[in-house]
Length: 184
Image (cartoon, rainbow, N blue to C red; front, side, top):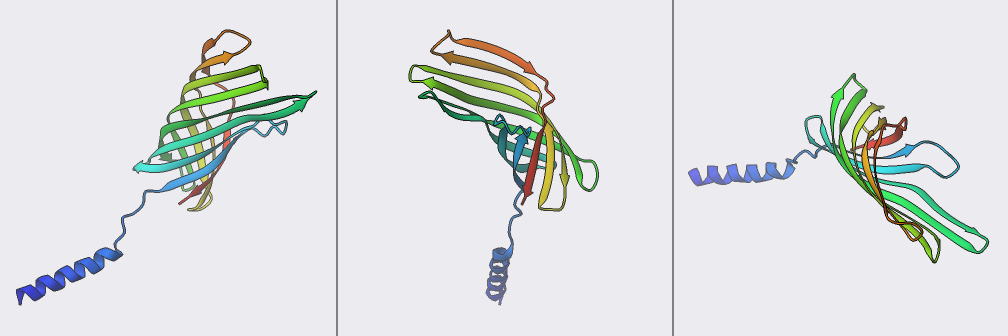
């Protein structure tokens, strides 16, 4: 009789376990735009955020700016800047739809420009910034956000024309990123 009870208990447990799913951590993806200059000097980024604990998210951001290709008098120029940023954001709910978030972000970038076969320059950058933002949720799937990332950075410039240059910059700008967020 005991064997039957153990067998049925195990059978019920395994059948129930098949329907129990671990909850996935909330995630967000989106696009952010820095300015709306139709002259071609906009930068944009794509991001992925995943909740790590209560009101704490890990963020990864890929950014691209100044993609440029021109042909003038049989001379072609090409330029590209891009990079990746990784950070952590802590969130605070301000009301039902509005959230404030802030946290550190580390980024690295690479840019290059080619003016001709003999004229080439590249820059390597590293930066530490502090993300400060607001996110407004329309519903449980869609939101918009606005954020600024003041910080400190270092740039190494290598060029065929000039000696290698190194600079360290501190930047607090009035630049604000506007983004569209898809939550799942």
